[in-house]
Image (cartoon, rainbow, N blue to C red; front, side):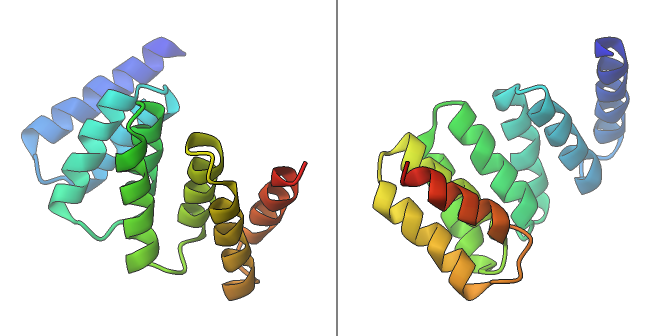
Length: 140
């Protein structure tokens, strides 16, 4: 399995080296490193993708997750907040920011308020069941 992933990474690197403006390839590399939990490498490729197109809420949310994984809590928080500011309907950013506030910064009430805000503002969003679950868990 690792050989296949490494072969894929090598092929994508070759592709990106041939065309450094290939956003899709940069995101794919970021995602592969994300899945491997190799935060520094994921961050590198997500940042590159965002330098080519800053308006990618999923990529910025994943970047925030990798910042947090890498111990950069303040950068993670900034990434999640930027997504929420620019894309207030992007539910995963609310989930992740709430988790960061509760687990990473011990700002439990602010995390709860964020999840409740998602539930109230976007009741039909796919992230709402997870927000409800996290909200309930935060009271246990």
